[in-house]
Image (cartoon, rainbow, N blue to C red):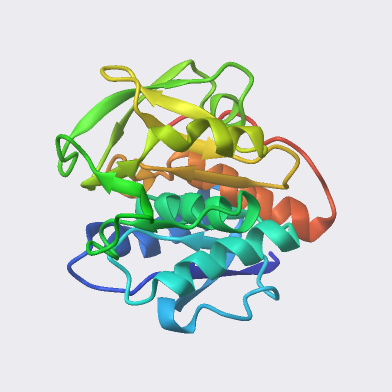
Length: 244
């Protein structure tokens, strides 16, 4: 079984539930899917020079020690065609990177720069109601990567966050190629984004790490692992739907 190197970008902490789940999920991927991911935890201040990795996963746990590091991880994956998964804070910083690097926007994250404002707008803002500890239905765009992965038009997912995307910027990011492929059923707020034409570039505001008991990888995590393996072998395919 070939071992594939992935960067887990985030400031590892025993107090972050998603971090505690990751070793269990990696073992489950090895046993259930036959994909061995050799994971390297990379603190956000050290998240540079990641282009040699087979995959990059920016994990939850914001505010990160280095916004720049989290943003750089997303940029490296996007520009080098490296399979990328961003969950919760990783999703937020994926959007921040795309808005700045691709759309040329001078925007901030309210959690990282609460003093910003005036001429600098927030791309990520406090949610009207915190989602920490909540679950909710996410409607998936037909034909999208996330919909193909889940094999269903809707899914119930768990959250642990208090910040979300400022949807005033949805149009400009969409015009520059990003697809917003998941929306909350109750209020229509964005919960998922992806980049067509990339081997795998997907972000979710929800935390797939928290699904179940950690012994069965969420389909999104299995699909990311499959994309890492496919890129390494030179294959190119859309991950098949996976059951939980």
